[in-house]
Each structure stands twice: as C-alpha cells, then as structure tokens.
Image 1 (cartoon, rainbow, N blue to C red):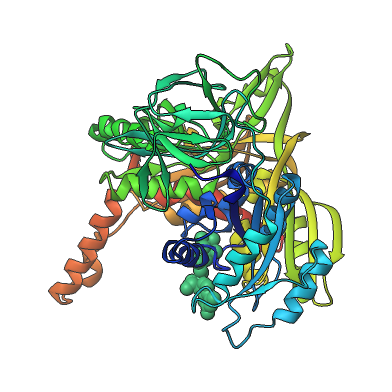
Image 2: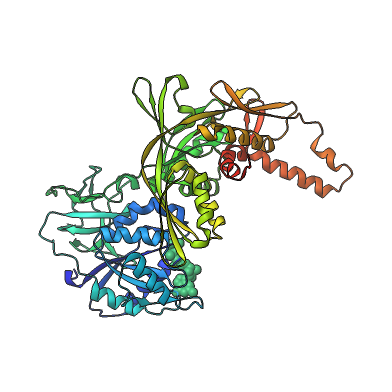
Length: 582
Ligand SMILES: Nc1nc2c(ncn2[C@@H]2O[C@H](COP(=O)(O)OP(=O)(O)OP(=O)(O)O)[C@@H](O)[C@H]2O)c(=O)[nH]1
C-alpha cells in the first residue's frame, strides 16, 4: 500500500482534439520510467479518452460519466490547445471540476504549432474562467515538452486524498467495461474504508451483491493486489454479467458492514433518442436480437424492446443517449454482426397527457394517443451554449431561431469570440444542428448542451400515406407552425427517393383527417436497361450492380419498395425548411 500522502488522483479535461489522449499517454510513460518516484500519481482518464473518435455531440451526454471521474479526483489538468483557445466543452468540464472542488492546473498544449499563441489563450482562460494562469504550464504532448513539469505541479498542487481508512467502505465506480473472461471490470476510487480480495460487496444503488474474484490497480497494466484503501484507485472483477449491473456513479460497500449512505451523483443513463431498427430480411430478426444483447453487455445506456409494425414487420425500438450513440450502434450492428438494417428516423421522447389526465411517454410518433383524446403534448428542452468567433454570431442566431430557439444570453468572451446561449427543443438539436452550426461557422463554433426539462408546445402528428396506406415509421411529431412546410417538403423528398413502380403511387401528408400535402410518383414506363441499349456491357453491369446494392436497403411497404433514405428524409426536411423561401 502507498501512504495516502503520496497519492495524487487527478484527471484531464479538455475540448475534443486538444490533446487529452496524447498527453495522458506521455504522463503514463513518464511516471512509469521515473523510478523511485516519491509519489504515486494516479491518472483517471475521463471516459471520453477511451473513445477518441467521438465528436462533440456525444460529450454533452457523457457529462454525467465525466463528472463521476472528476468526483473521484482531487485535481485536474485543464488542457487547452494553445492555437485554439477555450471551447464550449472546456467550459462545461471546468464547471464540473469547480463543482467537485478540484484543484485545476491549466496546461497550454501544442505550443509547438506555428499558430500557437499561449499568451492570448492564457488571457482567455483568465478572463473567461477566472483561473489564474501565471503558473500555467506550456506543453507539447506530441513532442514530450512540459511533461515532467506537469507531474511536479500535480505533486505540489493537488492535495493527497483525505485519510478516511477507518470508515465503512465506500468506493465510487467511475468506469466499467465488459471483458469476456472476467465479466465486467469495474474501475473505482475508494473514498472511505478498505476493500480486500474475496470480500462480499454490495452495489448500493442496484442492490446487487458479488464476491470479488480479482482486485488490482491499473498502472496502466493491470497488477493484482490484495487490498485497496481509502484514496486509492483500482479495479475489481466479480463475474458481473453486464455493465448495467455496475453502473458509473454507483457506490460499492461491504455486505457485512455497509456504509449508511451511498455517495451522491448516481443517475441512470436515460435514453433521449429513439428509433426503430428492422432487419431488411425478416429472417435476421433473431440475429439482430442476439447482437443487441451482446452490445448491451458493454453499453448500459442502450435500451431496446421488440417492436412490431404492420409496415415494417418485426424489429426493435431502441433508445440511445444521442444521435452519435445511435450511429455507432447501427454501424457496429452492420459491420461486426453483418446485419442489413432499416433504421427509422430518430425521435425524442414526448410526453402526452390525455383528456382523462393520464400521462403517456411517447418514444415513437405512432404511439401518440389519438387527437380527440389528447389534452397536451410536451417535448424535452435543452440549454445550448455555443462559442463562436464573433463574425458568425448573426448566422448562428438565425439558425437557432429557425430551430425554435429562444434567446437567453450573449456575451463577448474576448474581443474576438462570443458565447451564445439558447433554450431549444431537443428535437431540433438531434437532427442536423451540429452540422449546420459547423457549416455556418466554417468549423469554428463549438457547442455543448444539457437537458433542462419538458415544455408544453403546440405539437401535432404528421402522418404519411403511401399508396393509400399509412406508413407509421414515417410519421413525425412536429410543431403546428411547421407542419405544413414539413409535410410538403417531406412528400416532395419521398417522391424523389422512392423508385418508380409499375403503377402510379400517391404520397400524402396529413394531420388527422386533413391532407396537408400530396404528390404522386408516376408509373414506371421503361425497363431500366432500355436506357443504355447498345451501350457497352460494363455500363449495364454497373447499372445492375447499383440497383442490386440499392435493393439491399429496401423495405417493401405493401406493394411499394421504400429505400432506407426515405425513412431518414424527415431529418433533412429541417434543413430544407431552413432554406425554403416560402
Ligand atoms: N502539434 C501538436 N499536435 C498535438 C499535440 N498534442 C496532441 N496533438 C494532436 O492533436 C490531435 C488530437 O489529439 P488527441 O490526444 O487525440 O486529443 P483528445 O483531446 O484526446 O481528443 P478526443 O479524445 O477525441 O477528445 C492528434 O492528432 C494529436 O496528434 C501537440 O502537443 N502538438
């Protein structure tokens, strides 16, 4: 055991791409090579470290996990790219660090870059965050500059953990992952007491009990130990079947002498975005189920339940933390499990109150109670914070307004950069908002958002009928003011996307019994090959191949084949309405 006064627990917070992972690697190499060090530094990599390919959108939703990592530390490195500056995520993370009372050490990374301007960025950190930067460390994680200085500063400034060894065991879970041999490997920080291999432990929030089969520290390789004390960080394995049983934020205590109270901050990951996943080939349904179960072993936030739709057949209604999470899961299902899926447009979770006063959770538009029984519909809202160079402010405000945003605040962070705050419906953010923001700011704006609650709005169900049949997966819940636009644009888009059939196919958008838009796909006249009669054979082959590839992602709805893109068309509509002149 290491004397508690020689332990330092710290983590790294940074905006995406500012160099968190590179710096973490350097620090680990350095602590490993400096022998007889007078300390044991324990680096708690924030969860986003393990997922370096995630983009900003995901991070807002990962904040609870990041906040648990921070709760397990006494200090943190605030890493800011010296060629960029403070971004939306930097701010969100700093607030969490402040809430957790951490000692924050500013590090200006990437000073090797020709565009680096550490003095400007220092001023920015001082002005925006109010953090003294006179001792900020200049570093280049890439070139290994400033690494030793960082470690020295950590030892000097981050306080050692409080000596709580005498108390009943409380260990905070800040990460967990599934290992096919050991079961779930749980990473935790012992806050109070002591934990030994073989102990019978209880997870206070889930109530699950386990015998610890393996106890160890990651330094960074796993090294088994017999016991861990308050202040130490380690991992345990106990044949736990899925990460949902060992959730981030839960408290581990001893079954024999349990702590009176769990540590605070435990929240279950709530899926915020839902979509339907249907195998293109109905025979793949059992495989899809197996694959989802496997993914769930390592993904406590993934939710799914069987869904049967008259249009789509058997599939699953799946819940995700956000769009990025959804895309990652879909991609893994298709790549790793070789499934061909039709995905329906993502939707947020609405709350509907019927005239009898009952509240209904609506995670699928077609589940909305019928109009004549509806009293009200509410939708989730977020507080969105954007940081942007000031020349894009006008364009971003316009975007936020188009997306039903409600202006809250604007502040000049520095002479050149501005922060904008809006309240806006989550439904408007989970479409292509991030892309639109990036394109309007040439990639320079960054954003962060957090759920604030539900608000009642004048929302209606927009139904889509193809060839006279209601297609549930194409239905959408939209604001009444936009329903006409969306209906019109959606019907137009569907006409472009759905291939011609042997017969004329009418497409209609309706609110209740009222048709708000209609189009028709004319009947197919020519054979597809007729176009290139006499043309060379390779061209024909190419055309056929293209058709075959297209076919894979079709779903037959009644007599009409509908391609995958049609199910996502409603997402593009928002963009279209934004640029529609009408
Ligand atoms: N020039 C230069 N590039 C750096 C430095 N540190 C990191 N990078 C590069 O910046 C990019 C992002 O670095 P990462 O360490 O992946 O950043 P991150 O903050 O961990 O990113 P996420 O995990 O995706 O949030 C990589 O291409 C690194 O090679 C540095 O000191 N100088």
